[in-house]
Length: 71
Image (cartoon, rainbow, N blue to C red; front, side, top):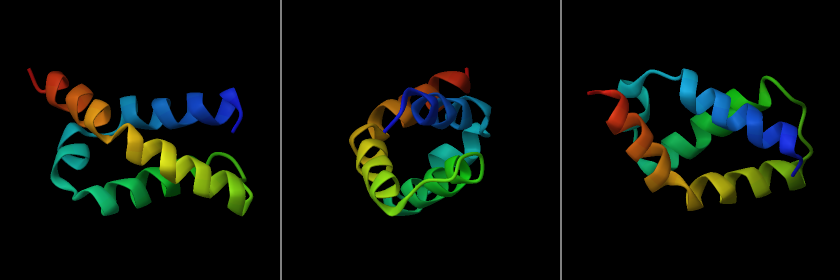
């Protein structure tokens, strides 16, 4: 996965509504973040799978970021 894709993912996280990031279950949030990221960059299936795994491994961080933005 390229640094550009990672920047796009974290941009999606930063620009998403806190409510969205906190209310979805894990699987739905991973799917939603992949979809939002792939609308900005065309990814092949291998990159999409890698992105999904990366997001899954960072869900706690993503939710912590969203939670901190509430206050």
